[in-house]
Figure 1 (spheres, rainbow, N blue to C red):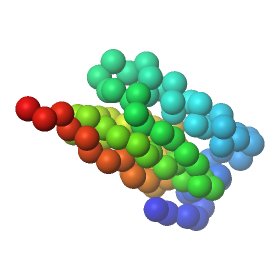
Figure 2 (figure 1 turned 90 degrees about the horizontal axis):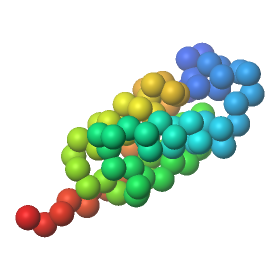
Figure 3 (figure 1 turned 60 degrees about the vertical axis):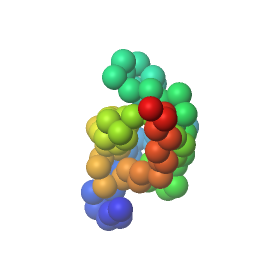
Figure 4 (figure 1 turned 90 degrees about the vertical axis):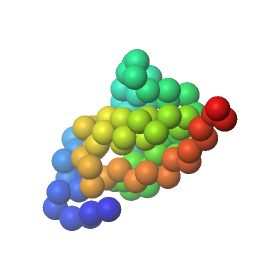
Length: 88
């Protein structure tokens, strides 16, 4: 995590609320056909996006982080997702 002049708060000085940031990330995750985001929760802690919940595919972690990073910057994304892989 990086706080400083390149933080999300500085990039979004237009007054974006945490709710609008969460809604934007949630919408981006839900429209991506390559990721199952149904069990991923998005929260904000200051300028940092917390990705929590469960993933069922290893690629979903990278994709979710990548999508969130496109919106708020890589340094402002914290991964707290847990793996729940189906038994084969």
